[in-house]
Image (cartoon, rainbow, N blue to C red; front, side):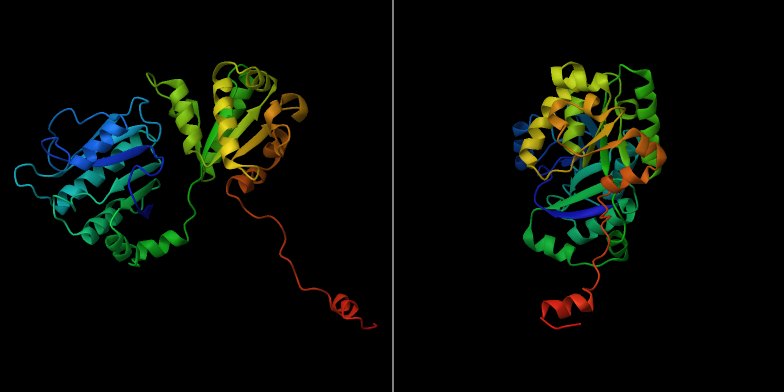
Length: 328
């Protein structure tokens, strides 16, 4: 799914941020400034024209796990080609599928030094990436180009309007109880089967990754967070122990920023709600494990933010007459 956004690829959180470079590995002064400001790794060497090289941000940049350098300009000719953009887009698809990336921020590659037409580059994105399940945010800083492209109405964009995004949901739980771990794993699989991008350590945490930073990134990027609360989870949260304690500090800070009306964090009570819920979440409305086991739709309604209130009908005639002071 492709979204058009006005601004810079650095504006919002994502899994992978794509930056342009030449086949010699050189970047523009603006890109260089952003790399240094955000403490990102440089492309280590030259790379073939039309290829994408992805590097880990190594927890130095909290808004993305990876930075991709797209060789969208041929260093020998200082020009670009749509075939090169198409190959980069294909490389992007492969990497995202192999590394569970669901959000990508990318500029209109090849439209600067490469002199490609912005509309043609965007059309290439739509043709190659448009039907993928992950979200590709195409950032356009120039107001005129943004208006030109956002004003287009291709068939794929009409389709996008009726497509519901896969909500990204991070699942926080304690590893101490095997029955909780097993149930959480099965819940994550059920959510995935129902169109939810469920983020779980057993799915997405890979050897060598920094655990606290991974948890931080997932909490930041999630649209919803499920807190699977058993007695061990409540104890670790209240005492700030282990990974749950680390997540609790981040969650409390995020909840303060979002205000009282925030619905991002959902308590799932594994057992007694009062005993198993952390102190800071006791005032929040939660959902029970038994309710989810009976009907997972009750949880999906919260995740997809479906309004379950009935439609308000017409006011009865007798009420109108009474209000008007008429006798019936």
